[in-house]
Amino acid sequence: MAKPRKYPPDPKTPLVTHLIELRDRMLRMLAGITVVFICLFPFANDLYTTLAAPLIDQLPVGSTMIATDVASPFLTPFKFTLVGAFFLAIPWVLYQVWRFIAPGLFAKERKLVLPLIVSSTLLFYAGMAFAYFVVFPLMFAFFIGTTPEGVAVMTDISKYLDFVLKLFFAFGLAFEIPIAIILMVWAGITTPDKLVAKRPFIIVGVFVIGMLLTPPDIISQTLLAVPMWILFELGVILSRIMISKHAAEDDEPPSEPPPSAASQEDFYDRK
Image (tube, rainbow, N blue to C red):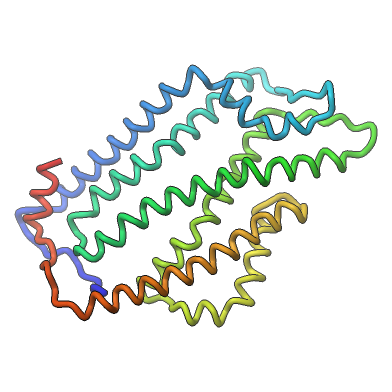
């Protein structure tokens, strides 16, 4: 495994060059998000209706959602469309991050980082999909089913959006556990054997995290904690595979020197 190293100082590639490149990449990220938002905005109301479907399907006959603020019917779908544009543009955003950091990586590091970026994106989407298709129907059915008699359920659309976005982020980040484990093992912070030795504490920890990140009901807590536990075990397995693969590669002679500052500048010139 390659040892950590710093950029060599070179007057040909001053700090301002990297700052300009960073600015360009950030502008491209913003442009990508803006394009996606413009494409989605005409369908903002339909998108919000789809988002609210898990709750609406569980409401009693004749019940609806409400808007308590004058501007909520416009601002709430607008906000969701903007957040949705960012979610959909995540591959483009991470690609720009990759193009910025790639010149400073060894060949072995590039082989590891790119799959991690792709897999982390897919896992984040998988966490959101799990929340929408599995957690929301069960959770809202539980909430509606426990409503006291004589109480009408009429959820405000803006509060509902804040609630589901929080869960989307919680489940999306929770599904990144395998990536976090691989990065920690790669950086030498821990080892698979140490993680396995701490499994009982980790199991308790994921249920505590599930309690803190989800509403106070056992269903949603369990639906977050159990996948986190499974993903932890998956991360341990993948980190063992990574260690075995790098051990085999370290036995081979080096095939490529580290990239120089000049090659980094050429990389940016070819963008």
